[in-house]
Image 1 (cartoon, helix red, strand yellow):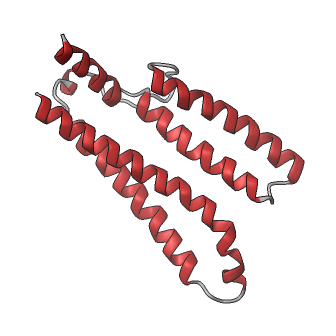
Image 2 (cartoon, helix red, strand yellow; image 1 turned 180 degrees about the vertical axis):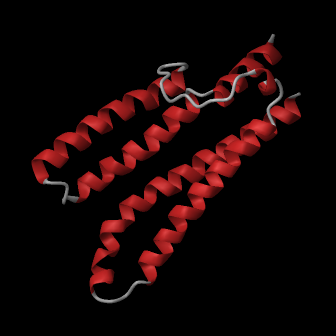
Image 3 (cartoon, helix red, strand yellow; image 1 turned 135 degrees about the horizontal axis):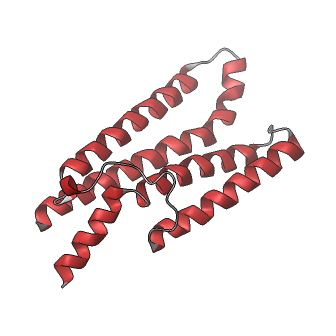
Length: 152
């Protein structure tokens, strides 16, 4: 049981890292805009490939995490899209999501979305939304339940 759950935890961690890298690509996009204007597209192609590869790798890692967690077949499939504050870690990212959405809206209205800080907030919204869905979802909650059962 521990071996199966540790494989699931490993794949879940891989997906989180992958989605973090995907979100971080938004931070580089405004910096490479000057290269695009000068005719050098190599960096923009690398960033685009990095974005798509990490997105696909993160999704595949989530599927592998679901397959490698014992007891998850009894739990209904689904992400934590409309669930909030299911556990302590999820609560942190839920609060971060709310703050970053509000900050992005305010900054977009005030600065018309052209400042670099808007990209920072957009990256934060993207990552915190994905983490909200993962940490409030059934895969992570099943890991928490299995950990509590193994401690007893």
